[in-house]
Length: 304
Ligand SMILES: Nc1ncnc2c1ncn2[C@@H]1O[C@H](COP(=O)(O)OP(=O)(O)OP(=O)(O)O)[C@@H](O)[C@H]1O
Image 1 (tube, rainbow, N blue to C red):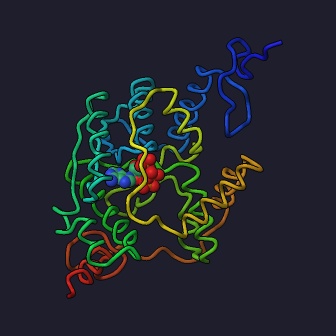
Image 2: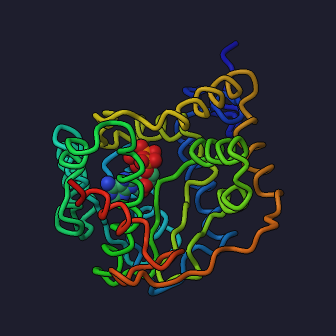
């Protein structure tokens, strides 16, 4: 006898759901993903009517699924939010220029406004130039610090109230593991927050916080979404790579491990007070010190 979908009991199962192991049909899989993200948005009170949300659009699978879901759920459930795509061009030839072409195609599909800001216009350096100058050792640090500030400045430019990024459950569980291994108890406490930066003027939220990477890939595939799937041409973050491999091994044995790590992270309290937010004396952007990390890195680049 052919088994039917474990959710509706009618259709033929087409997918073994990575998160639960259930054999389900495509329509039930789509509903499960869409309802889970809606539930996350509502239970965490992520959006308010009239808000402009800048979606960090990199052209990759996560942010492409994020664009698709926010557009769909905003219409389906009348959130009353205005969506605006925001892409950061780090200046990596053969990687970001190609992924931005994908973002532009999606802008047409979803008919959403798109703003692109580049490292070169904001900082006077492209990542290609930075790598030429400093090599492949510390380049991810520069890229991460600059991207954080570029997203903030881009979102302010377009008049957004909040940034939404495509960070998924795997990304968050990896970050919990990395902070645990580093003994970084302050970041450990913050790493599972669904909204961060509320103390500053540009909060960030992660509506895909509970979605597994494998399910995002399946959703994008079965919905025929247009995304760019090449890895960055520069060396990946090695430490995160180890955490990722470990997490994948755990997931193979016990798929719930990803959610359990997130829940453990959520339960760990932070004993240290958050560093006070200041304004960088040099560039005027948000900082935890007198001079922000981006300006400090720019200073090192300007040295011969
Ligand atoms: N160049 C960029 N421009 C705009 N947003 C970005 C950019 N890079 C990353 N982001 C945002 O940060 C999120 C996490 O980025 P990360 O580098 O971890 O990429 P990822 O996990 O491969 O995500 P994606 O599949 O969306 O590229 C992305 O989903 C996106 O919302």
